[in-house]
Amino acid sequence: MIERQTTLGKKVSIEGQGLHTGKKGTMSFLPAPAGHGIKFKRTDLEGQPVIDALVANVISTNRGTCIGKDDARVYTIEHVMAAFRGLNIDNALVELDMEEIPIKDGSSKYFVEAIEEAGIVELDAEREYIVIEDIITMEIPEKKTKIEIRPSKHFSATTIIDFESRVLGEQTAEIQDISEFKAEISSCRTFVFLHELEFLLKNDLIKGGDLNNAIVFVNRKVPQDELDYLADLFKKPRVTVNGSGILNNLSLYFDNEPARHKLLDLIGDLYLLGKPLKGHVTATRPGHHANTEFAKHILKEINQKATVND
Image 1: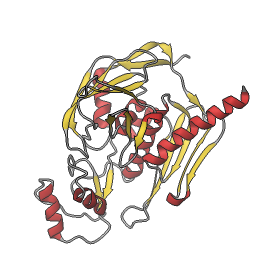
Image 2 (image 1 turned 120 degrees about the vertical axis):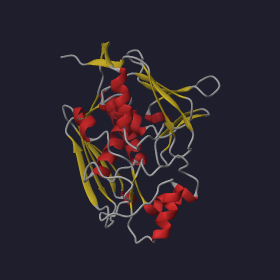
Image 3 (image 1 turned 180 degrees about the vertical axis):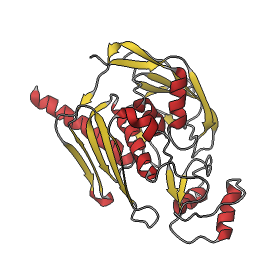
Image 4 (image 1 turned 120 degrees about the horizontal axis):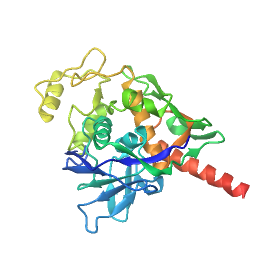
């Protein structure tokens, strides 16, 4: 049975603000023809430059995946890319009138809902996959990171995280098929430790931050006056630390939501290969830098094999 490429049925828009810049704007998903892939257009810049969502265009992975071309940038694209991959969207144009994707609640949920509102349309072209035929492995010893992909008839993935912390130690999450993405992965939100949040605040790096778009883990005793300061900063009446070492700003959807969010990020970053994968990925202590470097490593290995076979 032939799998056909897909796109969106109509234009759909989402409003919001970027996590780090705090700038408010509008992001729109538009239909695109077969073979177009996923592209981002900065409508607020002269000439409205378009950037292909490809790993070759990744220019930064500092607290999110950023792609760029010449002077144009689009920050924090991983949650949108995960939504496209999770719902099997091959072709779409993403228009932005700002430089950063709206953070919304820190997951892919709102982007999945937008895609479903737009509708999914099959195109008269066969879907192309990157098929893994040999085990490919990459390690970053200083970070205790290892990512491996093995041959498989479809895509599946496992993430293992370990922050060696009392409140967030080792967790595992997995997806057996991409069809599970919406129900099991898409709603899982980003997370941060309180000390990281304090650093980001002091360095003016989360202007669009809100205690509703991140799970905040607290791995030390925090005086109430410090918690009151955070509450004032984020315009909350009061915040406390619950028995699980998490700020009471929100409740977890899953006990292993952080590991599931890392899986969400992995899916989004690997879709920068430009085509969906067929293979099983096991990622220990992944992150945006490791994910995108692994995508480059996959392309390098496949190209080298093709050269040898020629």
